[in-house]
Length: 380
Image 1 (cartoon, rainbow, N blue to C red):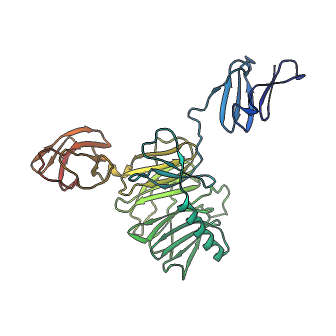
Image 2: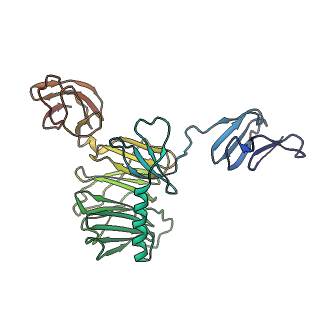
Image 3: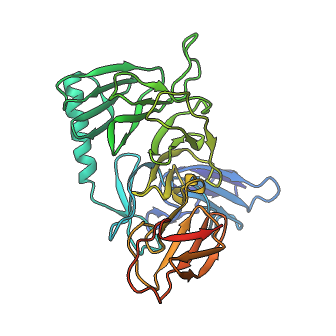
């Protein structure tokens, strides 16, 4: 038995004199376009597998019927997390090639095409600044009068006066991929570099993460013990001194006060994610949940690991620390709670584990209270 693959899969049982098309239906391939390879079992020539742009398919009867082998295979070319769920908006993801998709609230099945106006505006700004400098801008961030530009050759340009004057620093680390700016102080910024340098110049160590605390006058190397892998996204929370970076080797976490001079942080890998390149990380507005985009696999979220050393009381409904009312559910993120009180009232503990505890504000509470540690006392 002979098999072949081109636009369709074919079979010949007479040494190639004639061929039977195994995958054509009304002029199209039932396995999708872009078939790339075919394999035959060495013990049973009726068992064959075909790989293409739509995945891998198997036939146990010589191509008469086909079954999919695509469960758990990567299929989402993630590039960047554009926004996280908030209100009636879902998570937005930029795909490789610039397409924007959104996982709408309540969606159970798939990502949907979304408005890309924000991404288009950013690209126009990058092109505008790149035209002035004569270089391609690969990363861009702005807060108030502070501007940060990253270029494909590892150059970072920073301005504190809206672009009237610039400070320049160059690094051996490939293209600048992403910036994080402290929302409270744009002089404090982090940047990542997206290249794995197999053979860097003699005496030069590749840079993957840098930090400035003076608006880009100078930058400190935060690479430390990170693997020699491209670093893409970066997120941080200055209050908890937490930093997360997305790399081709997964997501890494560190803790350091990046507002002051000091030693580079020590990084630790975060477990539980698929073995794919992490393209981006983000923290929600209150730094309670960590989100990661994994190339090929999609978007994942978890309790931000730094909450285990900095617990916070939030509304269970939306993980936001805000005013609540009698009977409402609250969660203590980052701690196992055994007993709790709100003033003179005992607060029921509904569920508790090492990462999170759920409590219910007593119905006897006469008025709304702010769910903060100063109002709820808990014993862990």
